[in-house]
Length: 163
Image 1 (cartoon, rainbow, N blue to C red):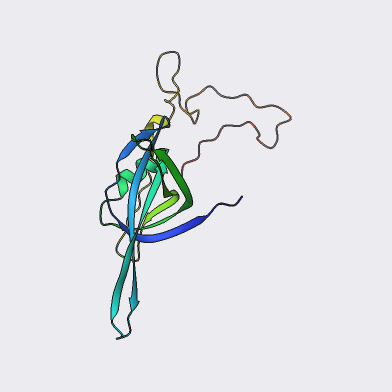
Image 2: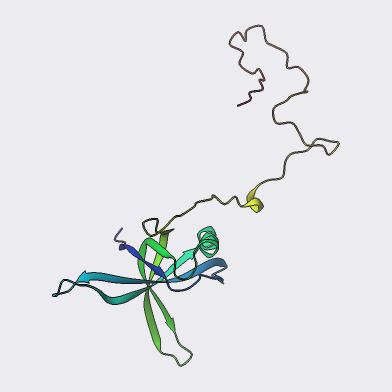
């Protein structure tokens, strides 16, 4: 495959918001990257700021919207793609967009704390018995499982392990 993969380091130009497109959630982020260099006089100088549009989809979009705020230093990696559309006047337009495969707050610019997000709606409800009580996953209090005479290795035995 001939994907163009890019990595951009810069600052978030906006706080991303969730949108819906093609039946899926997505978030857009603008990232400004300003190159610093030493001029002829030996002084550090800012070059022009390059602006990039970054798009994430589904869970990544939700995480991005919850994690990044305008002004945060970020590092973005993703596929560089062309988005095309037609204006209301019928004019064809296009822009380059980074379809992000990774977005992170830049830890070289400050302290970063990570916390994993558990999406509870994806978890199945705990199994219940005929009386509506939760089923014990460890089998404590369950009827004894009969041993087989040829089961010397203890295969099929229940054991509660606490760690």
